[in-house]
Image 1 (cartoon, rainbow, N blue to C red):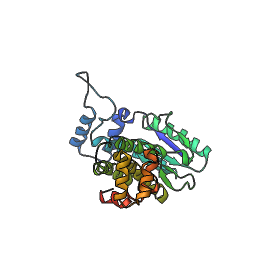
Image 2 (image 1 turned 45 degrees about the horizontal axis):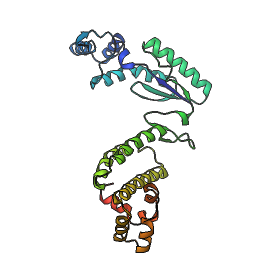
Image 3 (image 1 turned 90 degrees about the horizontal axis):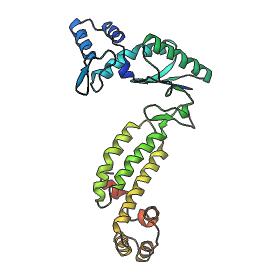
Image 4 (image 1 turned 90 degrees about the vertical axis):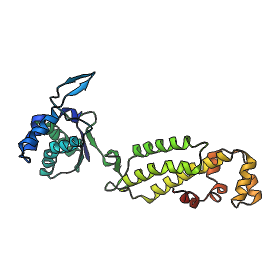
Length: 275
């Protein structure tokens, strides 16, 4: 079982005194401690007026994530001292236990610890206990077939396809090369981030679907049956098959998955353009 614990408005609710106490245990330089305190107390600009900050850390600065980790290091130590496996990123924390009853006990216990010792608030709407396959963390989940294997979460897949569809929809009237140039940064970043998912079939199917979309754009760009027939012949298809394919009356999506397109618009062509 997975215990998911989300802290409500964490960056807005960090207690300054508790945080400075943790920092001062490691840092003894008084001018530096005074500077950090001044940073925490920096006012908030609202409607042209500055109001004092009594809790929370300013967001957007590289120092804030560092201070948040200082604040939550004790939570890590507390979890480890109980012999539990966990992973935490900023204010999101997952704890792993064997049974559902144990998960409930752990969630209740650490909710009391976080709210009592650290004076933070646990978001009860987003926190809970889940089976591995129903749990998500940083875009990953666990495989339904093997709970020890992490895979891309379905929500992450949907999000990237939303981005890709926007690129495909804007590609009408532009060159194939330009479309691929827009795809590459999205695909490269996504693939690098989710490299821990080692399912060959998943990545192969995704590659195939992307090429399917690109072949569809090519078919649409050819517009008329005569142009399609001529281009298919130029690309090596025999005249009879080229003619039949060009006048089949089916839509672009259907045609882009058929042999007359996969045999003439080969994967090597996309590779030469950088895909």
